[in-house]
Image 1 (cartoon, rainbow, N blue to C red):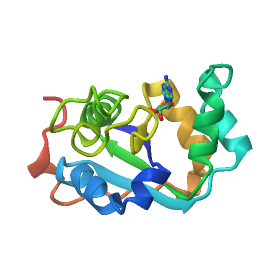
Image 2: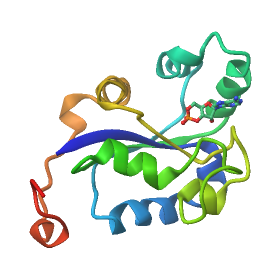
Image 3: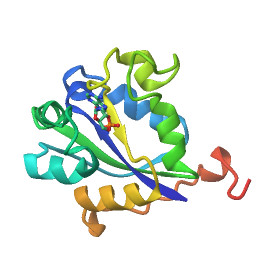
Amino acid sequence: MERTLVLLKPDCVQRRLMGRVIARIEEKGLNVVAMKMLRISADLAKRHYAEHVAKPFYPALESFITASPVVAMVVEGLEAVRVVRDMLGATNGRNAAPGTIRGDFSSSRQLNLVHASDGADAAAREIELYFAPSELHDCPLTIGPWLTVVGE
Ligand code: CMP
Protein backbone atom coordinates (compact mmCIF):
# COMPACT_ATOMS: atom_id res chain seq x y z
CA MET A 1 0.00 0.00 0.00
CA GLU A 2 1.15 3.53 -0.79
CA ARG A 3 -0.03 6.95 0.33
CA THR A 4 0.09 10.14 -1.71
CA LEU A 5 -0.81 13.78 -1.08
CA VAL A 6 -3.57 15.19 -3.25
CA LEU A 7 -4.50 18.90 -3.26
CA LEU A 8 -7.71 20.19 -4.79
CA LYS A 9 -6.36 23.56 -5.84
CA PRO A 10 -8.21 26.89 -5.59
CA ASP A 11 -9.58 26.60 -9.15
CA CYS A 12 -11.03 23.16 -8.35
CA VAL A 13 -12.79 24.51 -5.23
CA GLN A 14 -13.98 27.70 -6.96
CA ARG A 15 -15.34 25.77 -9.94
CA ARG A 16 -17.24 23.40 -7.60
CA LEU A 17 -15.43 20.38 -9.00
CA MET A 18 -14.37 18.97 -5.62
CA GLY A 19 -17.08 16.34 -5.53
CA ARG A 20 -16.39 15.12 -9.06
CA VAL A 21 -12.66 14.77 -8.43
CA ILE A 22 -13.16 13.00 -5.10
CA ALA A 23 -15.73 10.70 -6.73
CA ARG A 24 -13.21 9.70 -9.42
CA ILE A 25 -10.62 8.89 -6.76
CA GLU A 26 -13.11 6.78 -4.82
CA GLU A 27 -14.52 5.10 -7.92
CA LYS A 28 -10.99 4.01 -8.84
CA GLY A 29 -10.86 2.04 -5.57
CA LEU A 30 -8.55 4.36 -3.66
CA ASN A 31 -9.09 5.26 -0.01
CA VAL A 32 -9.19 8.83 1.29
CA VAL A 33 -7.51 8.44 4.71
CA ALA A 34 -7.20 12.15 5.63
CA MET A 35 -8.87 15.32 4.41
CA LYS A 36 -8.98 19.02 5.38
CA MET A 37 -9.80 22.41 3.87
CA LEU A 38 -7.21 25.11 4.45
CA ARG A 39 -5.81 28.34 3.06
CA ILE A 40 -2.17 27.80 2.04
CA SER A 41 0.16 30.49 3.44
CA ALA A 42 3.05 31.94 1.44
CA ASP A 43 5.42 30.06 3.77
CA LEU A 44 3.69 26.71 3.22
CA ALA A 45 3.61 27.36 -0.55
CA LYS A 46 7.39 27.89 -0.54
CA ARG A 47 7.95 24.68 1.42
CA HIS A 48 5.55 22.66 -0.71
CA TYR A 49 6.93 23.95 -4.01
CA ALA A 50 10.58 24.20 -2.84
CA GLU A 51 11.86 22.77 -6.14
CA HIS A 52 10.03 25.52 -8.08
CA VAL A 53 10.77 28.56 -5.88
CA ALA A 54 13.58 29.81 -8.10
CA LYS A 55 11.66 29.29 -11.35
CA PRO A 56 10.22 32.23 -13.29
CA PHE A 57 6.64 30.98 -12.91
CA TYR A 58 6.88 30.62 -9.11
CA PRO A 59 5.50 34.08 -8.12
CA ALA A 60 2.36 33.44 -10.21
CA LEU A 61 2.09 29.90 -8.80
CA GLU A 62 2.33 31.21 -5.23
CA SER A 63 -0.31 33.88 -5.74
CA PHE A 64 -2.63 31.31 -7.32
CA ILE A 65 -2.19 28.59 -4.70
CA THR A 66 -2.59 31.05 -1.77
CA ALA A 67 -5.52 32.98 -3.28
CA SER A 68 -8.35 30.88 -1.92
CA PRO A 69 -8.87 27.67 0.10
CA VAL A 70 -7.73 24.25 -1.05
CA VAL A 71 -8.63 20.74 0.07
CA ALA A 72 -5.72 18.52 1.11
CA MET A 73 -6.18 14.76 1.13
CA VAL A 74 -4.09 11.69 1.73
CA VAL A 75 -5.06 8.99 -0.72
CA GLU A 76 -4.09 5.37 -0.17
CA GLY A 77 -3.96 2.36 -2.44
CA LEU A 78 -1.72 -0.01 -4.35
CA GLU A 79 0.77 2.11 -6.35
CA ALA A 80 -1.28 5.14 -5.31
CA VAL A 81 1.42 7.68 -6.29
CA ARG A 82 1.56 6.57 -9.94
CA VAL A 83 -2.12 5.71 -10.20
CA VAL A 84 -3.23 9.18 -9.05
CA ARG A 85 -0.66 10.94 -11.28
CA ASP A 86 -1.97 8.93 -14.24
CA MET A 87 -5.53 9.91 -13.33
CA LEU A 88 -4.55 13.62 -13.36
CA GLY A 89 -2.87 13.56 -16.77
CA ALA A 90 -0.18 15.93 -18.06
CA THR A 91 0.57 19.11 -16.07
CA ASN A 92 -0.78 21.34 -18.82
CA GLY A 93 -4.50 20.72 -19.15
CA ARG A 94 -4.26 21.41 -22.87
CA ASN A 95 -1.86 18.45 -23.25
CA ALA A 96 -3.63 16.12 -20.82
CA ALA A 97 -5.32 13.15 -22.46
CA PRO A 98 -9.12 13.03 -22.61
CA GLY A 99 -10.40 10.85 -19.80
CA THR A 100 -7.89 12.25 -17.32
CA ILE A 101 -9.06 14.80 -14.74
CA ARG A 102 -7.05 17.65 -16.26
CA GLY A 103 -7.81 16.46 -19.78
CA ASP A 104 -11.51 16.61 -19.08
CA PHE A 105 -11.73 19.76 -16.93
CA SER A 106 -8.68 22.02 -17.46
CA SER A 107 -7.37 24.09 -20.37
CA SER A 108 -4.51 25.66 -18.44
CA ARG A 109 -0.96 24.87 -17.35
CA GLN A 110 -1.19 26.72 -14.03
CA LEU A 111 -4.89 26.28 -13.29
CA ASN A 112 -4.65 22.51 -13.50
CA LEU A 113 -7.12 21.75 -10.70
CA VAL A 114 -5.29 19.07 -8.72
CA HIS A 115 -1.81 18.42 -7.38
CA ALA A 116 -0.51 14.95 -6.55
CA SER A 117 2.91 13.90 -5.25
CA ASP A 118 5.28 12.83 -8.02
CA GLY A 119 7.11 10.07 -6.12
CA ALA A 120 7.34 8.19 -2.85
CA ASP A 121 9.82 10.62 -1.27
CA ALA A 122 7.75 13.64 -2.30
CA ALA A 123 4.62 11.96 -0.93
CA ALA A 124 6.20 11.40 2.49
CA ARG A 125 7.48 15.00 2.61
CA GLU A 126 4.23 16.55 1.40
CA ILE A 127 1.98 14.47 3.68
CA GLU A 128 4.06 15.68 6.64
CA LEU A 129 3.64 19.30 5.51
CA TYR A 130 -0.15 19.11 5.63
CA PHE A 131 -1.01 16.47 8.23
CA ALA A 132 0.03 15.42 11.73
CA PRO A 133 0.37 11.64 12.13
CA SER A 134 -2.75 11.65 14.33
CA GLU A 135 -4.80 13.04 11.40
CA LEU A 136 -4.07 10.02 9.20
CA HIS A 137 -6.66 7.29 9.57
CA ASP A 138 -6.51 3.59 9.03
CA CYS A 139 -9.86 2.79 7.51
CA PRO A 140 -9.73 -0.65 5.94
CA LEU A 141 -12.84 -1.33 3.90
CA THR A 142 -14.63 -4.64 3.95
CA ILE A 143 -15.10 -4.17 0.19
CA GLY A 144 -11.30 -4.02 -0.24
CA PRO A 145 -10.80 -7.59 -1.49
CA TRP A 146 -13.42 -6.94 -4.19
CA LEU A 147 -11.55 -3.94 -5.55
CA THR A 148 -8.04 -5.33 -5.93
CA VAL A 149 -5.81 -8.26 -5.06
CA VAL A 150 -2.71 -7.38 -3.04
CA GLY A 151 0.39 -8.70 -4.81
CA GLU A 152 -1.13 -9.05 -8.26
P1 CMP B 1 1.63 20.85 -9.82
O1 CMP B 1 1.48 19.44 -10.24
O2 CMP B 1 0.94 21.30 -8.57
O3 CMP B 1 3.20 21.16 -9.66
C1 CMP B 1 3.73 22.45 -9.83
C2 CMP B 1 2.72 23.42 -10.38
O4 CMP B 1 3.28 24.58 -10.96
C3 CMP B 1 1.98 22.74 -11.52
O5 CMP B 1 1.12 21.78 -11.01
C4 CMP B 1 1.35 23.94 -12.19
O6 CMP B 1 0.19 24.40 -11.48
C5 CMP B 1 2.46 24.96 -12.04
N1 CMP B 1 3.35 25.02 -13.20
C6 CMP B 1 4.19 24.08 -13.63
N2 CMP B 1 4.89 24.50 -14.70
C7 CMP B 1 4.46 25.74 -14.93
C8 CMP B 1 4.82 26.72 -15.89
N3 CMP B 1 5.76 26.49 -16.81
N4 CMP B 1 4.17 27.89 -15.82
C9 CMP B 1 3.23 28.12 -14.88
N5 CMP B 1 2.87 27.24 -13.93
C10 CMP B 1 3.48 26.05 -13.96
